[in-house]
Amino acid sequence: MKNWKLLFFRFISRLILKDPAFSPSLMSRYQKWTLLWREGMNQVGRWLRRPIAFYLTTVGLETNNTCNLSCHHCPVSTEMTRSRGLMSWSFFRQLIDNNPYIYRIYLTNWGEPLLHPEIVDMVDYAHTRGIHVSLTTNGTLIDRKMGQALLKAGLNLLKVSIDGGPKLYEKIRGYSYDRIKENVYQFLRLREEIGSSTWVEVTMVIYEETIDEVKGFLNEWQNLVNAVNFQPRFFSLPRARRTPCRDLWRLLVVLWDGRVTPCCVDYNGELVLGRADVQRLSDIFNSSSMRVLRKQHLRKKWSGLCAQCTYYEADYHLSLEKIDEIKRNLRSKKRL
Image 1 (tube, rainbow, N blue to C red):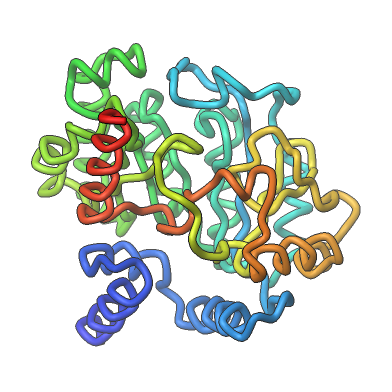
Image 2 (image 1 turned 180 degrees about the vertical axis):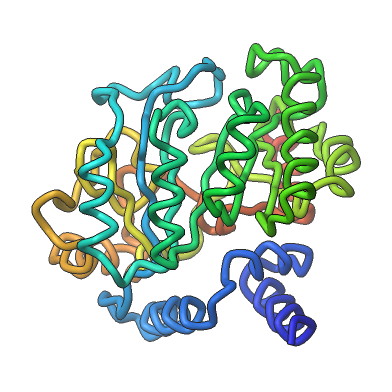
């Protein structure tokens, strides 16, 4: 059965992402066929050019939008102007309890989720209700105690953001490369000791400063973790938008204060669609504002943030072929 699933996801990753190597990551995200079916139905609606989505299955929850690092490529420390804070425990429980159709949550939007004092309780609460739980972290706070707690709470997917080799990483993030490496190694050892099936990925943000370190990064990590991913930096790479955003038919993002936006690219909350503390997420997902946004994308008449963003055209992932294309574009841009 597992082999058939892998073959299926290879077909999907080749068809959509143009990168069969991403198929194991897809399989880790779609462990439930119901989730895949419902998201597939949403995308059929997009292909049929319908501004309505059938099912809201995935939600990003901004548990915290502060960070213990000051990376110069991240809006949290550079361009974010909205207020900072933590999602309250009572609001988090309200979200989970009032939206039982949610199959998957990401406990990360902007900021470092492990700074939230109740992050482990959040993982456990969602996991016990059958929700696939993921989070992205800078990895600096994953000591032995935190690693054990996350694994025992039932975390399904851990993504650790690491940019480049030792010198570049320390320049960008101002943190010891050896320490972050040991944190990841320790988490992997703990996973084996506990017998957990938590999927572990490392991610590198791709832009002009990091793009030449792709191959070295891949060689460093590909045999240690479940997957290595490359993500484009927001609004910085020379790739023109070509297609409507799939995520408008797939997910919503709830900011720490309850406001709802269509995606994480909206780091300053410019595209707020409603409030999750007084509305059901399913109602917001097919609200008039969301339909207008989908219609703009279907007509390729995007504006504002959407006009600048090509992030989700690759669905969190840049293949090596796309990275080579970006390199060529960068060289052409420099020659001009």
